[in-house]
Image 1 (cartoon, rainbow, N blue to C red):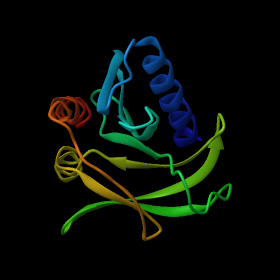
Image 2 (image 1 turned 30 degrees about the vertical axis):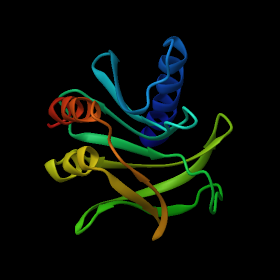
Image 3 (image 1 turned 120 degrees about the vertical axis):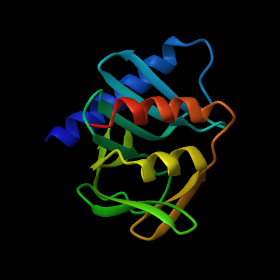
Image 4 (image 1 turned 90 degrees about the vertical axis):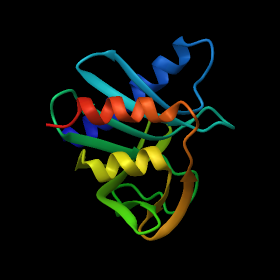
Length: 155
């Protein structure tokens, strides 16, 4: 239940914060205006849609990761392994799929670790159940956003 609510909160926060801005961010952007809750969202540079988001409470290492696929098996309640991979480095998260506010999302709970932060800063390919769903490459401003989340959400 906590993962579902956190995922819903993440999407609502990222959507409302982006709408309040005159320019939608491109790449990673940290929404830290609702402290102690932090949401790091990856905005697709072409569409402005949130593709990936991470949500945590400052001081705690639990982090909810949500991925919004654009295609593939979008069965309600589908269990899948989300894997963030860059070369030999990888981080896996057990996730469940559901529809929220007209968008399908896989979300799962993990722990903020240095290896996960390194993947976020360095770029990664995300796989769902072994299927390549896209590559997320950071821009020149992304590192600061990711580092701030990693520092705040290390228990």
